[in-house]
Length: 199
Image 1 (cartoon, rainbow, N blue to C red):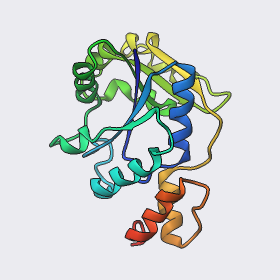
Image 2: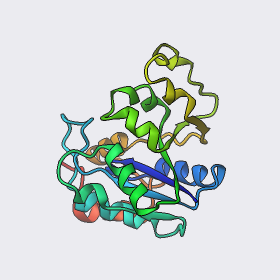
Image 3: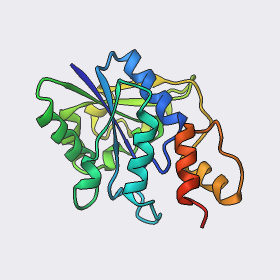
Image 4: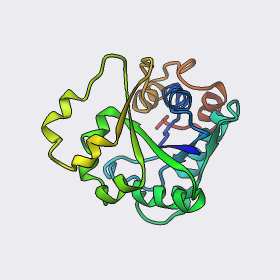
């Protein structure tokens, strides 16, 4: 069985995340894709992240229409920073026969050598680098001497461009701009009901 994992703060989750997961599920023949909201993301120390209960609730609302998507609260329930290698190890324990594919943005691939216990991570899973059509890894050429296994185990997957980011959505809410059609309607309603991103 092939199992997809997609992590992030999901602050908030939007259609770009969902399209990415669905394309990966189809192209890589994944049995399911598990969304894993980060607890304490170590790569965002300077930014205030919304409370986990809100981020988890928004992901849960966004996934209800796709039976191939699941939510895991593993990282938000684990104390301390959320490291990908620990999450992948735990999923390997839970799904002993599964081949795990970790889905991340192509721009993040060049930073993988700096991740916590990166070499161990590469022994545990395959990496999926999500890119917009036409993207190549040429920009990472200078880094290919770092962790050579990384570049052999990476799968570049092109996804139709969805010009939206969580940062942009938060800013638009703060400015009073509409966010309809950037994320699922139940998530939009949740943001309004709880007054998220207004301050």
